[in-house]
Length: 454
Image (cartoon, rainbow, N blue to C red):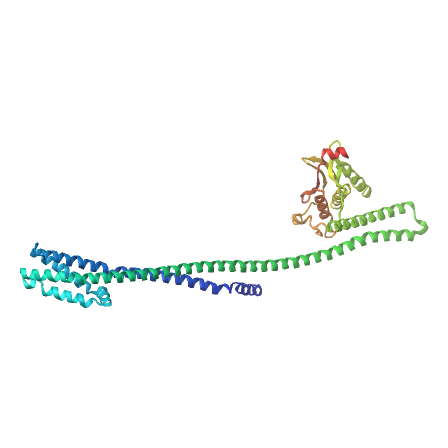
């Protein structure tokens, strides 16, 4: 068992090993797609936090509000102080963190620092709320507008360029992700195909192995059955031949002292032996014709009760000491079949009933119609069929417990069942161990047109 399982595991690994690299490529494609998707999401998040255009626009708005607050027509100390602080806070924001690095890359960080220093020099809280200071703040704020506008333009242009570059990168990443997923899908299809192909190969290999094992076992069984059959047939041939030889030798030894009674006794023995030989040869020939599809039949309406009566008469002549009874409904019961084959089946059933029942027990035949079938039931009061023999009763060469020490080739019932099916019929049986059995031949009823034609 271990030796068988080890090669099986090796063959399974050999079938599935080629698909391991493909699986690794599939997993690699999925990991690549996930990594690119994560990088895209991270880049988008960072881009949002570095939105310089909003900060610069806020600085422009606060500087414009400071200019309006310090204009000669509308000056209010509280309002000017508020706008001054807001403008200064926006400029300080531009000089912190990512905004400072951004301006440094553009070359505007020093400009913003200069603006901040100029504003701090005119801080109203430090220098007092004087009209001259407000005038200086007004002039300074107006002079800073072009610089802030230029910074805003540069930031906007740079943001557009970076946004365009990011969009291009996003599209490229999306294409890579789509390609990776598509490739992974194709790889998955390839894996599925390889698995199905290898599974099919493995399945076919197992089927071939099972078929070979089954054929080998079947060949062994057939060989064993043929050996047993040959031994049985040789025994069945020798027995009647020995009886004939013995009867003739006894007559020869008596010479002129042979009486009419001696001749009659030996004639009965020889006739019975010849009948057994004839039935054995007939059985073997019928089996050979069945196996080679050479069996020919003449299907026509046959009177089942008449066929049964003929078989009873022949069996009664062979076994005058036995009681054989036939019963049937009035009138001929017409079945469709072959006269010779139907007679052979009934003769086999009657012979078995006589062989496997005591000499003082009757054998009864009953012919009847049921539905679309005509039947002939043969009943004996023998020992019945053992439960262990019943499933194998119609198997070729099978000899039940009752046959082990007796006559029989194990072919009679098997041939009878095959001949019944050949005619579109069947054989059924009921048995009661220790009490007897009923074997019934069923044939299809002859159609009315066939009966008229016959």
